[in-house]
Length: 166
Image 1 (cartoon, rainbow, N blue to C red):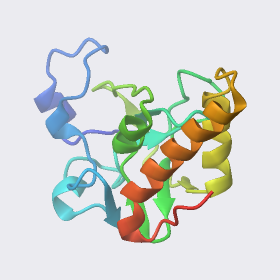
Image 2: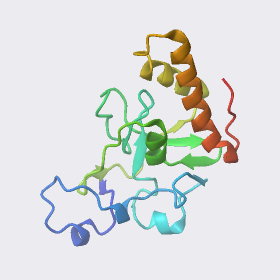
Image 3: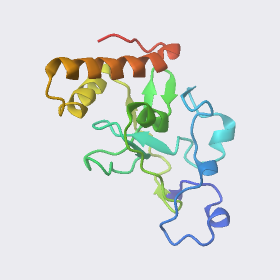
């Protein structure tokens, strides 16, 4: 086990175990959208594991500390999301979807060899939207809402080749 933050003891000398990670210590794509293949050198220096600080829940699509169990559904771990050769920014995914984001704690330990990732799958994304909007009683309104959210999300990632069809 290693700390997820380089120089943890220097940066958080008074941490009692409940201090949120500082924004400048968060490793994420510099454009806050995606990165091709690997994090840029600047972002890699922020973490000993070489992965983004945050991942996405494959069930509810909330974001939180990579490889920690999702606080909403408690079933799966937040995982780094890949689409083709790109790593997607999990914080941005949650923001685009209006979903929750769990902030990492500074003292969090991480398995440094943990490399499981979640590949973006259109069917899982669509299923999550259907579950998210099941409270909408009018079927046509629910379909329109799902279609709009799907289109907005995939259009955002269209630049890297994400298809936008339903």
